[in-house]
Amino acid sequence: MKPEFFAQLTRLGAAASIIMAGSMALAEPKHGIAMYGEPALPPDFAHLPYANPDAPSGGKMVTANVGSFDSLNPYIQKGSVHWQLRYLTGDSLMGRSLDEPFSLYGVIAESIETGPNRDWVEFTLREGAKFNDGSPITTDDVIWSYQTLGTQGHGRYRGFWAKVETLEATGPRSVRFTFNTQDKELALLAGLRPILKKSQWDGIEFGDSGLDIVPVVSGEYRIADFEAGRFISFQRDPDYWANDIPFKKGTGNLDEIRLEFFGDQTAAFEAFKIGEVNTQREFNVAKWEGQYNFPRVDNGDVVKAILPHERPSGMTGYVMNARRDVFSDWRVRDAMLQIFNFEFINEAMTGSQQPRITSYWSNSPLAMKAGPADGRVAQFLAPFTADLLPGTLEGYALPVSDGSERNRAGIRSALAQLEAAGWTVQEGVLANADGKPFTFEILLQNGVSEQAAIMDMFTQSLSRIGVTPSVSSADSAQFKERTDAYDFDMTYYRRSVSLSPGNEQYAYYGSERADEAGGRNLMGVKSAAADAMIGRLLNSDSQDDFRAAVAGLDRVLTAGRYVLPIYQWNISRIASDKELKFPEYLPIFGDWPGWQPDVWWYEE
Image (cartoon, rainbow, N blue to C red; front, side, top):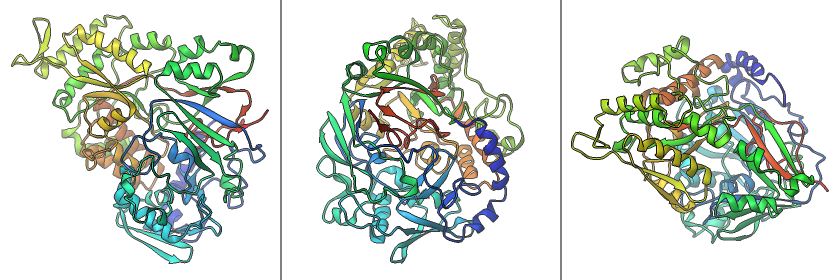
């Protein structure tokens, strides 16, 4: 791992301050593109710095996954699809480097060209680019893929498509996007959509496919076998068309990647202990230190690794749905944070060894600073002063308990906030002026014991103020169906964020898409200030302005009190069979999609 990455990021900011000149310089075909300045790797780079071009081919990786699946099409809204499918099977025009905040290099596209201010972008396809059935990838396939995904595909693709004015072929192997919105990130996002085979879907309703159709794509892996709800087996194509492309050298080394599905975490861990699964990612430090002492570890057949990274914490915890009356008042959400006794929970779950998430971009230079907003952050937020929640400008920090189970100070603060919101304890039950009890539902996914244990401690704390929530469990398909419809009061929430937040922030926290079915704004935040901060970070002319906009967004969201944050993982803990190897050089994003299984290999 390289030290001082963020010092490098600061130096990049100097180049970013002349983004206009940088974008003008891109008005010719190039091998890659960066959000700010130039990509780090030169046109003649041989391979990604975190890939081993000499890695042997062969072997397999088997992972344990809690839950199930009922679809093999990761590009549509319908169905429950394992998250890895869209990363394992399909290439895009460009590929993202995990060693830079936001840089792309050619995969299906051999070059990229942009116009002044990045108001258009043009890609030239590689000769020889093929789908995994051997047919060539054409400009018709590219255009159809973007149109179809943007209108019939998963919601994650629609925001980008709405900003495309035209998409047209400009030559036998070239396509050009022209945008209707000033947004410098669009030129990069245009390179990151899956390319599907148009003719496969002739006469077939794209949005209704499930287990019956496996999309034809262009990646090095294809689905070779599966059993609904039990396993999916991906096989490497030895004749993969992109084996010699620099971005792909040293990736796709394993002959088979197999996803095994289990009903709960206990069964999944037991499968790893006996060798049915050969790699395991562990998030619980107490379990890592206390339960990874089984025979296969003791005899050296399983190797444990602790891997650092340099990405933000993101937000993990339990989200409150502000669309629901019960959590529409920020004072009620604040009370829940006061009652959520993190220090006690952390001691019980991790022995107090995991630091708490303090904001959405904590553990990074993009995070909001302690104390009052100042400088550009205060300037950006000033127009929204009247609508900002307490703490946004003045400074906000999560409540800290004394670590005791009773948490008396937190309970007192919670009751004061609830009373201000119209709720008081009446004959041992928290109720409003009409005598209606305060209650809500907590929705969890079956088999995830850690979530259930944390919520059990939380509900015990709630009982001290006369609140008895209901706790419901659902299988993975039902859980997805309900969260897609925002049919919950409180549920488990995990939102990863990066060093280069962009248009996806509108999907996460934007007002316009807050009520879009299947969206990602689970908390239901609708904030003009949040919308404005996202707009600013997308169109900043300097790294300083970009950072200030992200810090401002971080303040709006954190002071919004939408989530009960738990602990952060600033390292990854991975145990795997000794035959599974990975390069010593770790990218700044560390253990992240694009690293495992992509650059791992199997060696006897």
